Length: 157
Image 1 (cartoon, rainbow, N blue to C red):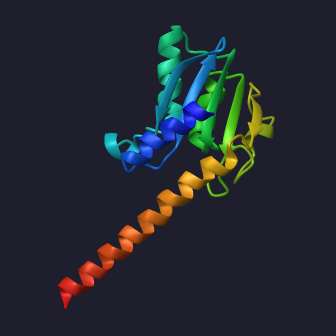
Image 2 (cartoon, rainbow, N blue to C red):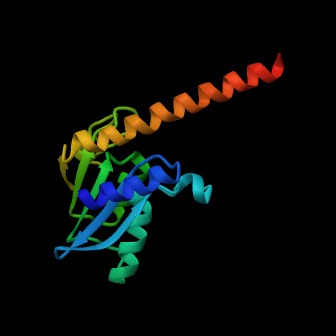
């Protein structure tokens, strides 16, 4: 999870939502990524999706059936769907996402019998650290927006 957190810090530095993901296969990291939605202007450029793409390329396979993903924030429905399609073995989650999480945060797709593949889920690894960087990011974003609004009001007067 420390490696995933380092990826989240890279996203933070780029003013991206600080989410990082790494995929481990046979005890080695085969892919790592962080959110690049703003940078690539691509709403699907989530850390999980980018890590899956990289891992599949590295293994020359569309399946990751013996791999584990470490991700700092609970995957959304899009990412969870991609993880199911990749046949990932396990997801280790840093912190829950009560707004868009698909593994128990907002929805619990991981416990659903709708899919032809079950993924093992582990939650709460480095939770304080993973939630802390997100809270700091959004607090700073609100402060920045507030300053922009103040400047706009000054310019209008």
